[in-house]
Image (cartoon, rainbow, N blue to C red; front, top):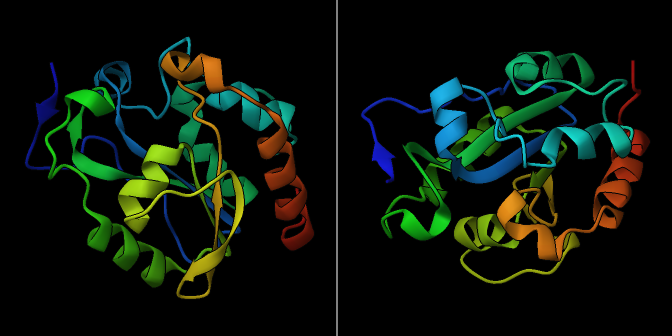
Length: 173
Protein backbone atom coordinates (compact mmCIF):
# COMPACT_ATOMS: atom_id res chain seq x y z
CA UNK A 1 0.00 0.00 0.00
CA UNK A 2 1.41 3.43 -0.92
CA UNK A 3 2.14 5.85 1.89
CA UNK A 4 1.94 9.64 2.08
CA UNK A 5 3.49 11.85 4.75
CA UNK A 6 3.73 15.57 5.38
CA UNK A 7 7.54 15.42 5.41
CA UNK A 8 9.87 13.92 2.83
CA UNK A 9 10.13 10.11 2.92
CA UNK A 10 13.86 10.31 2.12
CA UNK A 11 16.06 13.38 2.50
CA UNK A 12 17.54 14.86 -0.64
CA UNK A 13 21.27 14.46 -1.02
CA UNK A 14 21.81 17.77 -2.77
CA UNK A 15 24.37 20.55 -2.52
CA UNK A 16 25.92 23.04 -4.92
CA UNK A 17 28.81 21.76 -7.01
CA UNK A 18 27.65 18.19 -7.62
CA UNK A 19 28.65 16.61 -10.90
CA UNK A 20 25.70 14.18 -11.02
CA UNK A 21 22.31 13.81 -9.34
CA UNK A 22 20.16 10.71 -9.72
CA UNK A 23 16.38 11.19 -9.70
CA UNK A 24 13.94 8.35 -9.22
CA UNK A 25 10.18 8.43 -9.01
CA UNK A 26 9.47 7.64 -5.34
CA UNK A 27 10.90 5.65 -2.48
CA UNK A 28 9.76 2.05 -2.56
CA UNK A 29 8.29 0.47 0.55
CA UNK A 30 11.63 -1.06 1.61
CA UNK A 31 13.49 2.21 1.02
CA UNK A 32 10.91 4.12 3.04
CA UNK A 33 11.13 1.60 5.88
CA UNK A 34 14.93 1.66 5.94
CA UNK A 35 15.14 5.42 5.19
CA UNK A 36 17.70 4.66 2.48
CA UNK A 37 17.58 5.06 -1.29
CA UNK A 38 17.25 1.93 -3.47
CA UNK A 39 17.20 -0.36 -0.41
CA UNK A 40 15.36 -3.38 -1.82
CA UNK A 41 17.87 -6.23 -2.28
CA UNK A 42 16.55 -6.84 -5.82
CA UNK A 43 17.32 -3.26 -6.88
CA UNK A 44 20.46 -3.01 -9.03
CA UNK A 45 21.18 0.69 -8.35
CA UNK A 46 24.15 0.27 -6.01
CA UNK A 47 25.64 -2.54 -8.08
CA UNK A 48 25.24 -0.48 -11.26
CA UNK A 49 27.05 2.49 -9.69
CA UNK A 50 29.97 0.26 -8.78
CA UNK A 51 30.04 -1.74 -12.02
CA UNK A 52 29.91 1.48 -14.07
CA UNK A 53 32.81 2.93 -12.08
CA UNK A 54 30.82 5.72 -10.44
CA UNK A 55 31.85 4.52 -6.97
CA UNK A 56 35.16 2.86 -6.03
CA UNK A 57 33.40 0.11 -4.08
CA UNK A 58 29.93 -1.37 -3.73
CA UNK A 59 28.05 0.81 -1.25
CA UNK A 60 25.17 -0.39 0.89
CA UNK A 61 21.91 1.61 0.68
CA UNK A 62 22.40 3.00 4.22
CA UNK A 63 25.69 4.53 3.03
CA UNK A 64 23.90 6.82 0.54
CA UNK A 65 25.16 10.02 2.26
CA UNK A 66 28.69 9.02 1.20
CA UNK A 67 27.80 9.61 -2.46
CA UNK A 68 28.43 13.34 -2.06
CA UNK A 69 32.15 12.49 -1.62
CA UNK A 70 32.09 11.43 -5.26
CA UNK A 71 30.21 14.49 -6.50
CA UNK A 72 26.94 12.52 -6.65
CA UNK A 73 23.53 13.42 -5.21
CA UNK A 74 20.07 11.86 -4.93
CA UNK A 75 16.49 13.04 -5.13
CA UNK A 76 13.12 11.85 -6.39
CA UNK A 77 9.93 13.20 -7.92
CA UNK A 78 7.57 12.15 -5.14
CA UNK A 79 9.12 13.33 -1.88
CA UNK A 80 6.03 12.69 0.27
CA UNK A 81 4.82 9.38 -1.19
CA UNK A 82 6.26 5.89 -1.18
CA UNK A 83 5.30 2.71 -2.97
CA UNK A 84 5.35 1.30 -6.47
CA UNK A 85 4.83 3.75 -9.32
CA UNK A 86 1.55 2.12 -10.34
CA UNK A 87 0.19 2.58 -6.80
CA UNK A 88 0.97 6.29 -6.45
CA UNK A 89 -1.74 8.91 -6.84
CA UNK A 90 -1.60 10.86 -10.09
CA UNK A 91 -0.53 14.02 -8.27
CA UNK A 92 2.36 12.36 -6.38
CA UNK A 93 5.04 13.62 -8.78
CA UNK A 94 6.01 17.24 -8.16
CA UNK A 95 7.94 18.24 -11.28
CA UNK A 96 7.99 22.00 -10.47
CA UNK A 97 9.60 21.26 -7.07
CA UNK A 98 12.20 19.03 -8.75
CA UNK A 99 13.02 21.73 -11.30
CA UNK A 100 13.38 24.29 -8.49
CA UNK A 101 15.76 21.99 -6.56
CA UNK A 102 17.86 21.33 -9.67
CA UNK A 103 17.98 25.02 -10.61
CA UNK A 104 18.96 25.93 -7.02
CA UNK A 105 21.77 23.33 -6.70
CA UNK A 106 22.80 23.31 -10.39
CA UNK A 107 24.45 19.89 -10.77
CA UNK A 108 26.16 19.37 -14.11
CA UNK A 109 24.09 16.24 -14.86
CA UNK A 110 20.68 14.95 -13.77
CA UNK A 111 20.14 11.26 -14.47
CA UNK A 112 16.61 9.89 -14.28
CA UNK A 113 16.69 6.28 -13.05
CA UNK A 114 13.80 5.27 -15.31
CA UNK A 115 11.87 6.42 -18.34
CA UNK A 116 8.90 6.89 -16.02
CA UNK A 117 10.87 9.35 -13.85
CA UNK A 118 11.93 11.28 -16.96
CA UNK A 119 8.34 11.38 -18.27
CA UNK A 120 7.05 12.53 -14.86
CA UNK A 121 9.60 15.33 -14.67
CA UNK A 122 9.61 16.45 -18.29
CA UNK A 123 6.00 15.83 -19.27
CA UNK A 124 6.91 13.70 -22.28
CA UNK A 125 8.52 10.38 -23.13
CA UNK A 126 12.28 10.21 -23.56
CA UNK A 127 14.66 7.50 -24.71
CA UNK A 128 17.75 6.30 -22.89
CA UNK A 129 20.89 8.40 -22.94
CA UNK A 130 21.77 12.08 -23.01
CA UNK A 131 18.86 14.37 -23.92
CA UNK A 132 19.01 17.56 -25.96
CA UNK A 133 17.08 19.52 -23.33
CA UNK A 134 18.34 20.87 -20.01
CA UNK A 135 17.02 22.20 -16.72
CA UNK A 136 18.83 25.51 -16.43
CA UNK A 137 22.44 24.58 -17.16
CA UNK A 138 21.98 20.96 -16.04
CA UNK A 139 22.23 18.31 -18.75
CA UNK A 140 19.70 15.45 -18.60
CA UNK A 141 20.26 11.72 -18.99
CA UNK A 142 17.78 8.78 -18.90
CA UNK A 143 18.73 5.35 -17.56
CA UNK A 144 17.00 1.96 -17.51
CA UNK A 145 15.31 1.38 -14.17
CA UNK A 146 17.43 -0.60 -11.70
CA UNK A 147 14.27 -1.86 -9.97
CA UNK A 148 13.88 -5.61 -9.73
CA UNK A 149 10.38 -5.16 -11.18
CA UNK A 150 11.92 -3.76 -14.37
CA UNK A 151 14.53 -6.50 -14.78
CA UNK A 152 13.23 -7.34 -18.25
CA UNK A 153 14.39 -3.89 -19.44
CA UNK A 154 17.73 -3.90 -17.63
CA UNK A 155 20.80 -2.85 -19.58
CA UNK A 156 24.06 -1.67 -18.01
CA UNK A 157 25.21 0.03 -21.25
CA UNK A 158 23.46 3.40 -20.61
CA UNK A 159 24.92 3.39 -17.07
CA UNK A 160 28.39 2.89 -18.58
CA UNK A 161 27.76 5.77 -21.02
CA UNK A 162 26.68 7.98 -18.10
CA UNK A 163 29.84 7.03 -16.21
CA UNK A 164 31.97 8.06 -19.18
CA UNK A 165 30.22 11.43 -19.32
CA UNK A 166 30.54 11.83 -15.53
CA UNK A 167 34.29 11.14 -15.67
CA UNK A 168 34.66 13.76 -18.41
CA UNK A 169 33.27 16.44 -16.06
CA UNK A 170 34.41 15.18 -12.64
CA UNK A 171 37.66 13.84 -11.28
CA UNK A 172 36.85 10.67 -9.38
CA UNK A 173 38.59 10.67 -5.96
